[in-house]
Length: 197
Figure 1 (cartoon, rainbow, N blue to C red):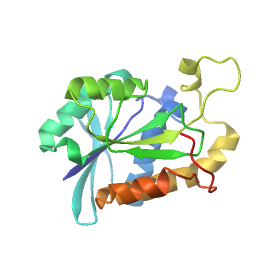
Figure 2 (cartoon, rainbow, N blue to C red; figure 1 turned 60 degrees about the horizontal axis):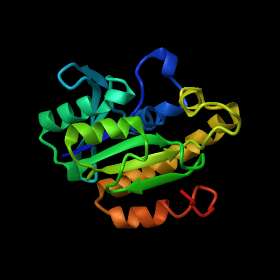
Figure 3 (spheres, one colour; figure 1 turned 180 degrees about the horizontal axis):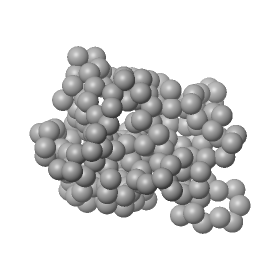
């Protein structure tokens, strides 16, 4: 069994915000698999289950808010008895240009509060994370405000294709082809440009 967690903030005021890229991704994956999320108070999450490439997979959207994501992730791993090697966390990334995705099988939080919380509660950074680039604000807008803003109309037009590529990357991870996945998806974005993230 594997666990895929999309990070974001619950609540209508956060729907469509850049910081909720993980939620956007996981909801798209669930739709593709015709899975339905249900609230699980035991794990402080919305949970859905799918099958892919012969694996049982739990999809989870934490309801703890971004900065406390680790609480929900720890509960999920404990409930389903899943090891860190079978955990994938999907989140936004300010340090990647918009439209670029990056998979890493371990590493630091890179300043992402959700990842920081997960690392703190798990006591380890040895879990895979799929980052979806949202870029940095071009004007003098604080990053904390930028991530909570909604995607621009121009960005929304591209978002579907970006999420499609991220789902392809996720399927590769599920099939335990992490090295292949990293080589394919980390080097270029959907337009074939070299990834500088």
